[in-house]
Image 1 (cartoon, rainbow, N blue to C red):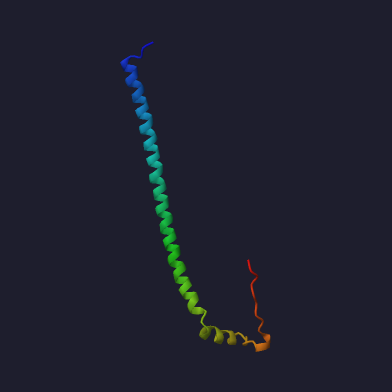
Image 2: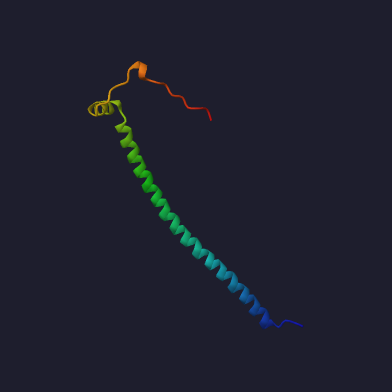
Length: 92
């Protein structure tokens, strides 16, 4: 049986439409994913900014000049030499 020209063209047209549809669907999903990644990148940037601000604030709050008067106002005192116990972490 010999395939006539019109069926040959129809077959290749169907293959072309299937491939073009697959590419269009893939592109659609890529653009959707790209939008989600952009939103997540903005969220990460905002979180890093807040983290930097909080790290700076925390570093400023840990200075002994600020901690000692606050501890004394709460009724705490500096430990004596005999009360200090050095702690060591076990090796991993």
